[in-house]
Image 1 (tube, rainbow, N blue to C red):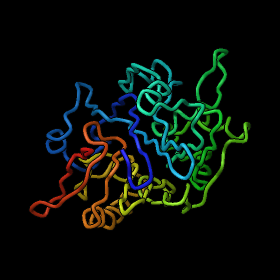
Image 2: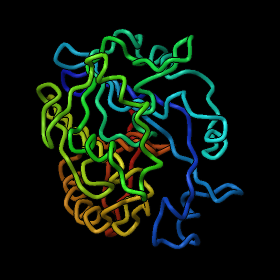
Image 3: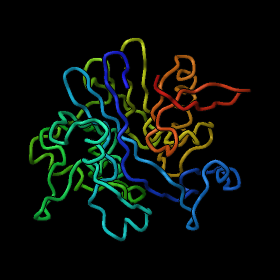
Length: 281
């Protein structure tokens, strides 16, 4: 699909399952299970929809999914069953190989967003999964990821970024910056202190990613906020600010974790937000 002069494609990585109570915080199960039915272990399905963009002469990948380095124990915990590698999905969807990616952008460094930054080679060593790419990582997020709290330590793994320093591919970025002209990253407190959102604008169209501030369309109601969020009241304040703009300006919204609707537009019906699945003309 195209937005103005930019080509965009959704690249879907493997599904992951997380505890439903953690995903919906203070919302009672009797409410959230109607829109996101759990399995027998109380886990709900989440996607990992990465985004490929051709813009400014660059081949850009936003997020890299869960990666292929998780232990068998973690694969079972998260209910993950991989049918193909991310590199295969990337090529099948875009015709672009991992070697051709020139920029990788991480909104934050939780493993389900950046696990695919690196991979094992045949000898079992960790190497960059995109050998010719520059990796853009929020500087403030990197500082926290390397010294996390006990509360969020389990979601960070240095294997997903440490080698990028050694290869010279890591570029740390400020709270607000342009990837290329028309693509802006902005630090947005809530899910954590330094996660960034993505705004892509070309030809009068806007695509916006809330990243994990609003992970799925099921989280559109204001109080539906994950227990994982370190600053839930700031998540709430940012939702109040961003969602009306998404409706008014007709943003194409990218929901990274939504299984059914990674891309949609938002409308208001009887005072409630409703997601309308995007269908390319």
